[in-house]
Image: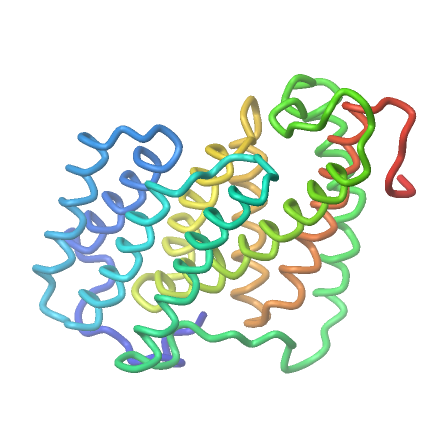
Length: 276
């Protein structure tokens, strides 16, 4: 997300106090969301808030404040893989809040920071190559993750002992719904806001840490955080290059297709809901 698309902040984006605000922001997300350690996490979150509010540029204060508000909401969100109606409603409310509130707040006083551009401005074969290579890489990643490194991880997603198509469809909807939300929040919101404040690599590192913290809390244990972190970095790179949501969402849905198939195959050996 180029800083020219929104009002650029004044001063050095790599100033020690601003980097400290970012570091404590990331640390608060890593402590509060997966571990629910509210005292140490709250202290780190508060440190980020104080550092942000002491910045001389009101745009820096507002943008970091919005992101810290999102961390506060997610810290208390029921992030797990339950597919009951009650959990769908509760989690959806939290997830909807952290993508709508930043957009609504910033579009009034700080327009151009968070945008929902679905389609690319120009066609590039390189982008299609990224989408295409995600298919074999996704297959390989889950072969390693579920088949060798952590074969117990699919149990983090519950399915009844006897095959139940309603439960399978609920899982399918939940996985893909969360997958789309991932890109709307982590890339289109967290990365976009951080990118308006910091250089690309710094912003991408920050969003990848928050991305990993949330998905680790949800289900991706074992070597999952490593795989998620690498994936988050590549998604941020794609968004930086193309400035649209289409490619990152398509790639995420490809990954989710292999995730869904791996989970179902683990619970119901021999049953293939998808043709791979």
